[in-house]
Length: 97
Image (cartoon, rainbow, N blue to C red; front, side, top):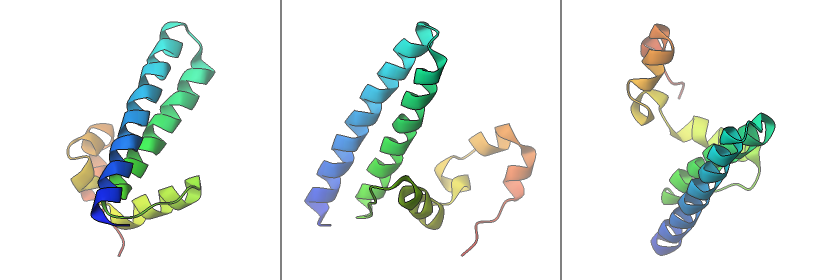
């Protein structure tokens, strides 16, 4: 993936994630929880694909996106402070090579 394509792909996917988040918020407000969870999942999926696109990495399959995310990111660096709020043990986590 060349740099221009990576940025364009990332921008497109980030806009898609924002749209999906807006949909999730509307569904939550309407107490349509199944739809809200679905849109929330795809918000995260699109946001992760946007981040990976900046590194020239992509997969259309959910398992591929999850695998790349796990392989190339350190949750402590990507989400500083958030994981420790969920569980104090997260501060002790190490990411396998």
